[in-house]
Length: 248
Image 1: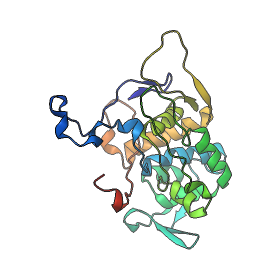
Image 2 (image 1 turned 90 degrees about the vertical axis):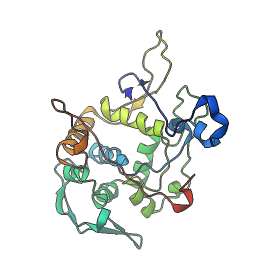
Image 3 (image 1 turned 60 degrees about the vertical axis):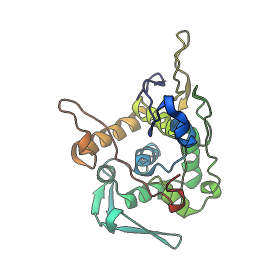
Image 4 (image 1 turned 45 degrees about the vertical axis):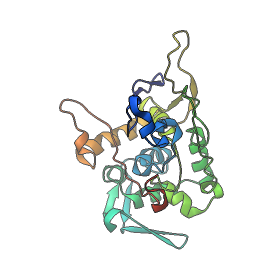
């Protein structure tokens, strides 16, 4: 939990936990701060960021219609929706509401690959955030950067790209505060102002994406996040994990 206007991290927790009175009984992996020391493929929570790119580049809008046949063919690969579902004609808002993979591939294909890479770089996904926590790691995503079209298609719905939780939080700050990438921090310095890393999206773009995320909570896959009396913006996220990583 944090403040997207200042970059403050207000609450942070890890699971599984351990008993500090008996720490020798636990695997060393438990002592990692996963927020800054673990890489993962973000899956569908990545989709709002890609949708923001498409809206910012003016190649799609919330009511742009895409016809879904249940799959997209990219470089000889067939990429399907969850449960192989076919949606037919859907708007971009519905693509976010129902987390439709093929619709996100459509958005990504309207954006030049280098422009897509530039957005990811500006959002800080190829470097450390610089948060004031020990041992932060990051991925150069060298395989993804090789530039194959199928890699970009997979990245449109959060697969084939590695990020840390703190990078993801930082990027969502930009969606929540009008497009400004803000330096995240834990310990507050009362003599300093929030540190901006640059404007990534316009306020108009982030306003549209926020409305789409509110609709996702009210009508889409994130209905469980509803709180009576409040408008909540949110996005569900699932991702495939290679079997070799299970149990790590």
